[in-house]
Amino acid sequence: MGKFRVLGVVAAVAWVVFGITLVIRLMAGDGGLLAAEMLREAPPEVSGLPAADYPGVGAMTAEYLTGKRDVFQYVAAYGTREGACARTEVFQEHEAAHMADCRELIRLDTAVCVISGVLAALAAALGLFRRNGRAPFVQGILWGLRIFLIIALALLIWALIDFGGFFVTFHRVAFTNDGWLLNPRSDMLIRLMPETFFIRLGIRGAVLAALFPLVLWAGARIARNRMKKTEDREPV
Image 1: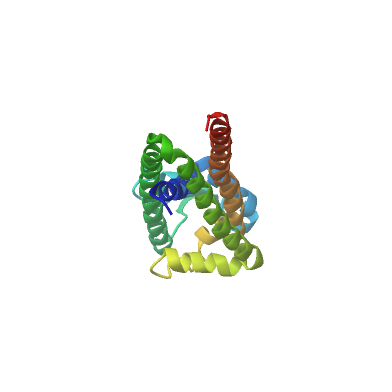
Image 2 (image 1 turned 60 degrees about the vertical axis):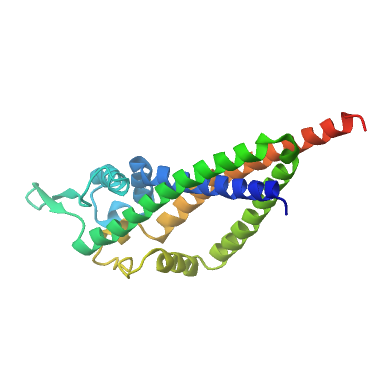
């Protein structure tokens, strides 16, 4: 494999990674989205959180994950028998500790997003700089996308067949402790974010992230077809 094909593969993989990490960062920072999905998958009668407090919890979670606030905690207003409101902290210390681990993952995601974006841009610049390297570079992009497609299909099949196993494996790889093993009877965090919460966010994120390889694939195919037409018109 020539160096320009390798650059094409690198550019394709970097572009796809950039898309995935960018979508994750944007979703983690969208408090309205988090609150809406919490309310949908864990309504007040399930979570025990007053409906009026969902937007606040979503906004607080997004701000914490993206580093805009330092403490993961929310004080909700619970009604009393006398009609007054009791202000109570929603999350326990071990739940906040797990969210601190999640925030580190989002920080890592952000760093990977920046690095992969720069790498994709540099690889594209180098691959397109020399005219005789453009054709193998574009071919490398298509090869890189095929590699991504195989990996993505394998993960998708695994998730469809056994989402529980996929979910557990992800957490065991992503976290170095068992802080993610929460009890829905005592922990608000897992009641607000059940498995279905992550399934819906995962589907939404996958659809958005898929736009990046699709755009790259379309651009590479168009570029390859144009180069073929140019070659056909050139005199022998």
